[in-house]
Length: 464
Image 1 (cartoon, rainbow, N blue to C red):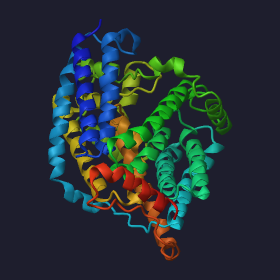
Image 2 (image 1 turned 90 degrees about the horizontal axis):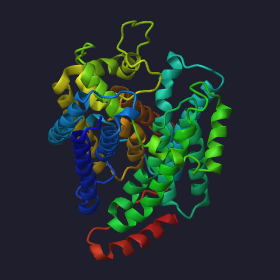
Image 3 (image 1 turned 60 degrees about the vertical axis):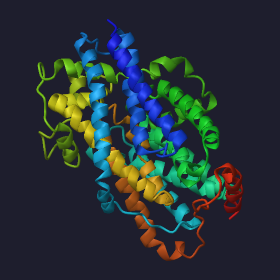
Image 4 (image 1 turned 90 degrees about the vertical axis):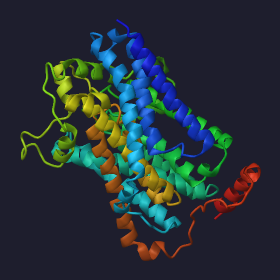
């Protein structure tokens, strides 16, 4: 039975989030590419668009709501968004927390960028080579897999900055293409997930935006981002139709073969567009609403405890918390990878209060990180590090939210460590070369003349 209430509320939430992003793009009071907007894009997709689809035809999903679950989703979405906006206000007062996050002050020279790309890509490839001969994922391999996606996306971001600053340099183009190829292999081997590979595509406009497009008017941004968005959508839809072909235990050669087929015929999966664009998040959230706490016990602060327990092997901590998605998978007797949704996580922990504290926390979280981005926007290393986790940021509303948050922290910490390693082992070498950093535009240029000035400015620095 369809739910007009869920359809209406999901549409209104989608309209609200879309309006906020358009406002950012037009007024430029906030960066349109921000952690906040990637998170909200996830809410729009996994609850807005998906909520409309689920509300229209719930019978097509793994859980058919009795009606109560869909109603509770409709009621909880505005509550969550209100808590999120409250969290943003709190986050404005927590900017001091940014002082504990390393500034990653590395000289922006060609050797510094190239060595950092090689180091992060090398670590990512090392993980793949270590897993290539194995057929299963154990504790150690599962732990190190948390780092490979961030390494690959960070390398892609730095390669993008190097290309933007040296766009007439064939070496920069070669590095960019090679990084994309190797990053694709790193982020798709031994996984059926899409988040890490999606982060590779996101890294290009993300770094480009903070390098130069952030200072441009609306038209140049739209013109440059449109083809990237179109290519990303087509590739992801096609990849989504083949990524499960060999189950979870596919070989390295099989995955490479799949990617070659995608490259040969990128439009082959477009017929599956509706299926791919219909996430099951609202259905699983509805199941949680309808069965917690009546059929299954709520677990206060389960997400926090799950994050704390991640580094410990289950052999040492047999009773350590399991992911909510696995619990729901067992409860539904399903073999699919189920996303409980951020609303489902909150409800399974502490009902309405859980939904509120998830909203407040993530509102404050994205505000603190975006505040740092504003202050460090001219630092390509910091921008690339933060951009290394965009796939997981967008996936946070889908869940497993605590697991994805761990993956975000793993990406940021590991890439920061590698770049600082490059800084301290090759510091004397990389500081001996001239800076190729793209400085912010000159102040005082009239807005109606800026695009022309910026084009000349780009050409000047691209020749370095």
